[in-house]
Amino acid sequence: MKRKSPFLRQSAQGGAPLLTTLFMFVWWSPYAVAQLSVTGVIRAEQEVTIRSEFAGIVQQIAVREGARVHEGQLLVQLKNDRQTIALDLGRARLAKAEASVEETKVLLANAEKEVDRVKIAADALPRKELEDKTDQVLRLQANLNAQMADLAQAKEEVRLRENELKETQLLAPFEGTVTQIYVHRGDTLRPLDTPVLELVALEDLYAEVLLPSAYVQRVRPDQKIRVQVESEWMGRSGLIDGTVVYAAPKIDASSRTFKVKVRIPNANGLVRPGMLAQVRFDFQ
Image (cartoon, rainbow, N blue to C red; front, side):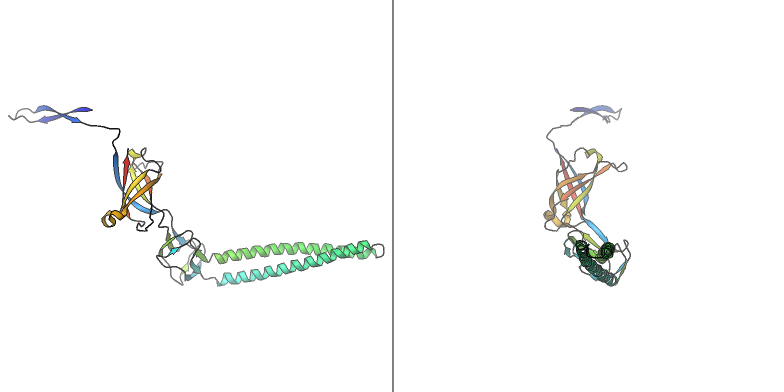
């Protein structure tokens, strides 16, 4: 394609400017590759600040900063004397309720046998004896029903007490690394308010960047991306092949940009959340 651009040049004699023409050639090829390099921030896919759902006093901190923990591992133990006593009492009531039910079942079985015996010998025994035995069976059945209800209530109470005791233990919600501990032994926690510790999964990282809206149709899922993390001090060890895992479906009206996430492997553990990365997009 050829374009003409007007250009004014002063004449040697100082007269009126002369109009000359500058020809500019722009070549376009369907095989040309456009590159876009932007700076992004490394973030963790799983990162959480753990808080207690209930008030309590820190009795034990079971991990240290920098420790790697597995899912379900104990992180912090709160004081649980009251919950332990309540659970012991609940279990004692449950054992008593179970014993009462078993005893009544035995009495009921014997009473039913007596009714059957009296029915067989009904002609030789007074009618009142059969009525008394039948009434006894009915009373035992009613008593057993009430005891079964008490037993169900005792089981539910034990379940609640066990949950209360479990709630004094703060467990790791996923496998990761403890990056910061905010409390000390003896501290009082306010429910859902006091930060206890921070847990981060360092293996599942991504680079978050903002791209101009003009590229919204050119970024696609699973697109391979070259990422350079902290080039000044990591050098070639920070050069990583990443993959696009998310491109925002809308454009920010004020900045005219959209967010893109590029997942990066971190098997050697050198990359950390918060680092800066230069992310290079190659567009065909």
